[in-house]
Image 1 (tube, one colour):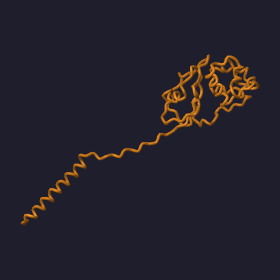
Image 2 (image 1 turned 135 degrees about the horizontal axis):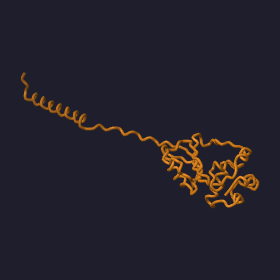
Image 3 (image 1 turned 120 degrees about the horizontal axis):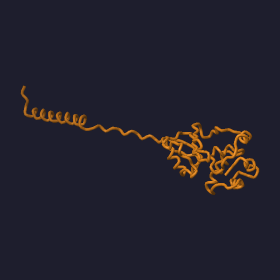
Length: 199
């Protein structure tokens, strides 16, 4: 079959175009790594936890998921000089809704570390004043944790927290009358706990 000169030129051009097209396709498919879509970064999950006891600024904190206990202690201003950290796993992650109490050293040994994994709005120790007065004796007001102070008759979360903040700001209590400087403690309430505290 005979082709004219013009037809041969057209065939050559088409052949060259076809070769280049195939080469370009193979290059894009085999040699050039396809661009992978970057995964959309997830928004950090926020946890709400409460830390109490022997830290400088006890309270409720919002932290990112995976935050470790030692990081939470640092956020709360660090531990006080009375804190007993020996029984704590400072590398453990904190959980949403967790209530953590940093214990204090005492003459008879260290207090047990407590952690309430239910909502921090709950009060697991719902003890009446009458029951408390019959079971509690001589709580050291200078080293007692928030939970210890709440065992005293008429002392709830708010006043217990004020006692801790007062002694951190003004130093240890030297007498029962010093407690009158704590907002919420009057003469009557002081008399109810006077025989139940030590210094």
